[in-house]
Length: 152
Image 1 (tube, rainbow, N blue to C red):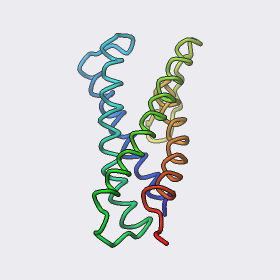
Image 2: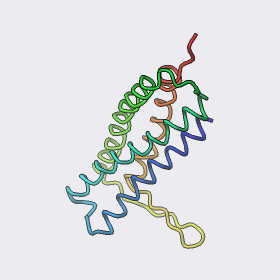
Image 3: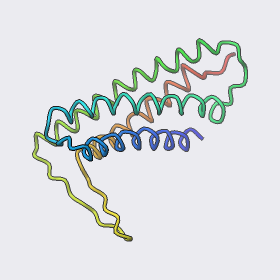
Image 4: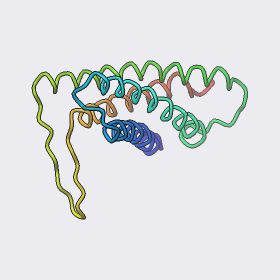
């Protein structure tokens, strides 16, 4: 169940991240501008908030089956604290990959799919896919052994 909701959380996070970048480009913000880097940072924070809220409720209810109300404030605090740690991991990987690909002069390529759908393999896409893999593992370990651990 963790993998299912981890993937759904990733969809919530990545979906909001790329939607924000899409709107920025639609409003005329150039991808090579400093303003676009600011949009990336804002998108990173917004996607984190949305993903964490989604993840907390799905993990609590369906992944770890926590029903008791006692210790709820502590559980919420440890969950958000652990997710702040994974936000750091996510940000390091995301911006590290974007920087590395940009420094290597990576050229975006497009994959054309049926029905006229195109998938652009941008530095942002590679960065978020790499970060998602790292973050799913980090979050599982922190959730299982810190946030939703079984009391003996």
